[in-house]
Image 1 (cartoon, rainbow, N blue to C red):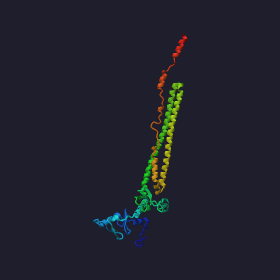
Image 2 (cartoon, rainbow, N blue to C red):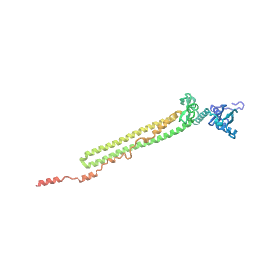
Image 3 (cartoon, helix red, strand yellow):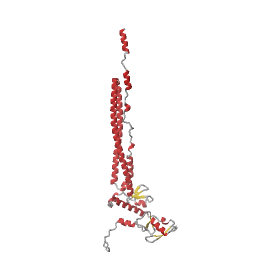
Length: 340
């Protein structure tokens, strides 16, 4: 409580204190990148500093002096003006982290306990004490603040981890939808395989009946040929059914793998932390897109189930048999000899 006013004073949180430290003394808002540092160690938005400098230098002379709005320290500028001042990458990086934390608080509610969060977040390989908390857009990989300021990503473009997380999560969700659609396609193809197997069996039985009727007209002399053609039809039928069943087994395996990958993707999106998710998101996305290509498996050509090429045409043979008759020439000659 404030003794003078008698009002309750809410204690200032660490985040509010940090936001105050990251405020520009000119615009009174949080620093807008790029941030420049003066020789007196005070920081300014470069845009605000340039506006203040140009207002004091209406004729745009090259170089000149610039007075710090915080401590009134005079800074001698070269011909580049404010753009010749050194950028404070550390402050810029702290601003990125702060905005990332604010976005996390806005989307998830309250921040998780610090101990639990530190235990779940992976550490940087280059800086073992630093958590992975930003994303390098140039290198397409998560990294830590020290790598941005002093390490291999200091000249790279970075983005808050949560923004990239949401983007890649949406892409992965699209890949899952594509995978689900592909699974539906696989199931439809499997159903088509079953229908074709039944059609082949039905057509095979039909051809067997037709063949039996045709061979019944030819009697015993065609029985051997009948058996050979029956065996040929059965072999073709078995080969076609076997081929389709093998394809159906391949599609079944493809469906099982797709379901397993879909379950894996779902678990990864629900249970993994942000950084762990991003470490595997690209690989999982590639696996999902690869698994979604159900058209890589072979399919039988149209009309594969047809058995019409094994249909037997006996019209010519029937016509020939209809013209056939008993050999009467020899019998007549024998009768003539007996008469003599």
